[in-house]
Length: 69
Image (cartoon, rainbow, N blue to C red; front, side):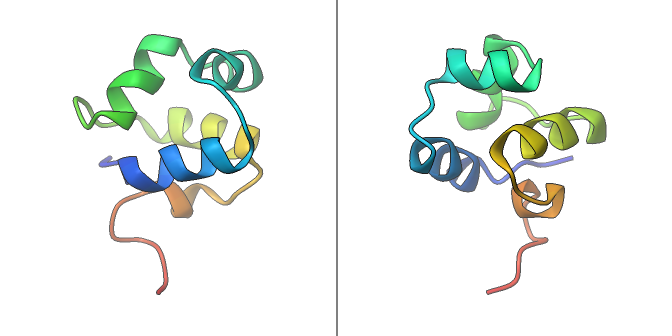
């Protein structure tokens, strides 16, 4: 799935989290988070759910084209 890289970065920074801290909270590797934020790769639904849970948002908020507004 294609992740909205700008929204992911925005949510992480709003919560004042580094990529390493998000790695700890979500269980998703730093390299994967970096690749998602730079648009180098897409993500499995499981990965999106883990990151969304760590950021306290619905998974749909992180998927490109699925957000309202």
